[in-house]
Image (cartoon, rainbow, N blue to C red; front, side, top):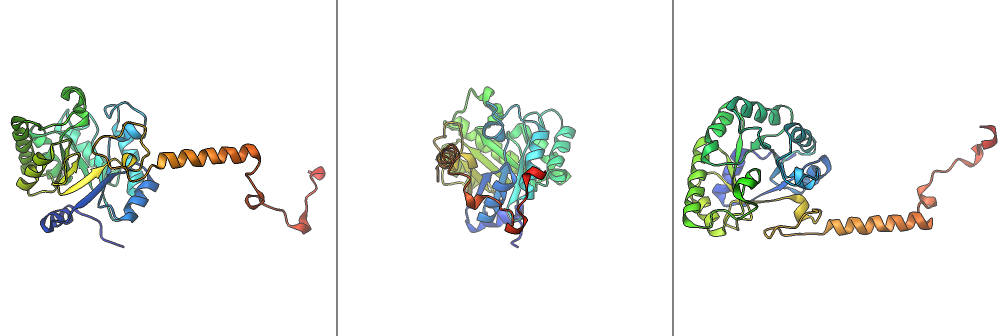
Length: 279
C-alpha cells in the first residue's frame, strides 16, 4: 500500500517541480476509482450542491451534508489526501464555530484537511484552525460562496489593482499557515506570478498551467454534469451519453423480452422440480 499523501509530500512535490493532481469526489465508488488511478488529492467540494444535490449554487449546502459525503469518500480512499470543503457560514460567524466545524471534518468525516474561501479577512480563521491541528487549504479568485458579492461567476484579478490584492491575500494566507492554495478563474499570467511568490503549492482551476497543480470537478471532466461546462474544463469522456445509451438499450431489451434471458435466470435442479399446486 502506498503512503498517504501529506502536506509535507505536497511541499516536496513543489520543490521538485512535480505537478500535483486534485479532483472532486462525493461518494465511495468514485473516490475508490480516483484513488486507485493515483490522484494526489480528493476534494469533497461544496460543489456537491450543484452537481449532486441539485441546488442552484453552493450556498444551501450544510455541514451535515458535507460530513455525510466526506465519510463516504474517506472510506474509499487509501492514498489520496481527502480535503473537506467548509460550507457557507460554517467558518464566517465565529472562531470557535469555525474550529468546531473544521474539527468535524477530521474527527467525524475522516478527512486529512479542510478548505475554505477568502483572503486576508480569513487569516485569523486559518490561524485558529492550524493552531488546533487542522491543516487548511485556502481558496482565492472566484470564490463561489461569494457569488452574489462578486456579481456572478466572473474571472478575478484581471487588472493590476485586483492582481495586487490577490497576491496580498495569498501572502496573508500563507503567513497564517495554509499548506496549499486554490486559485480559481484567474488570468494565467497572474496565477503564475502568485505561484512564484509563494512557498506553498497553488492548485489551479481555470488559472492556467503555471500553478503547481490542477483541480477539476469530476462530473465536468467525465461528462456527467447537467450544467454548462466552464471554459477551463477539458472533458476527457462523455459518460453522460454512455449512460443514456446504456439505459435506452436496457429499456429496449425489457420491452422486447430480450432481457432477462436464460443466462440471467436461476434454475431448479431437475430432481427437485417443485409442484406449485402443492404450495
